[in-house]
Amino acid sequence: MKTYNVGCLIGSLATESINRKLANAMFKLAPEQLKFREISFRELPLYSYDFDDDYPEEGRRFKKAIEESDAILIVTPEYNRSIPGGLKNAIDWASRPWGTNSFANIPSGVIGTSPGAIGTAVAQQHLRSILGFLNSPQMNAPEAYIQFREGMINDAGEIANESTADFLRNYLKEFHEFIARVLTVLPRGA
Image 1 (cartoon, helix red, strand yellow):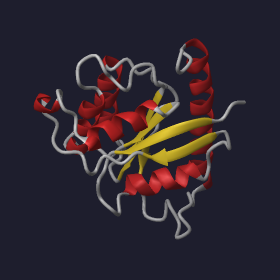
Image 2: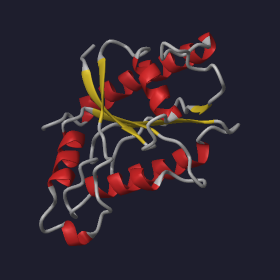
Image 3: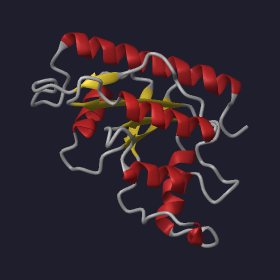
């Protein structure tokens, strides 16, 4: 199967984010046809339509990184039953100015981890609503709400629990197949 470049948005800006750790561990389990790169949004100012007539370089760079990706994987924590403000701000930058939505027709997947028993279920549902509005085809199943437990990721940055590793391998295999299906119908650059 074809190789796809997947842009990854880590919802947390924290250096020691458990979601960043999860993303990096997942990348080691991915099919070789998925090439991941993190798209940082740390430098983006707070979005305002005042920028629309003269987008700052940070905003242009971020939009271009989204547009150059074959697919987007968002790995996010849950803050107050929603997504982190920094992630929402980044999504707003990528979807503006009006008529230049960088997410349109780019396949996406969402996953996240949290110490809580329901993982990031509520944040993911909120994020799915946003991505739907942005016309980003979404992998709806399997869903992945990962409860972060001590020892889940070992010192080598790998998933230590074999059943969790198997689940994540399958998730990424399904994500690869989903990307292929979407891009067969909505080829990039067409």
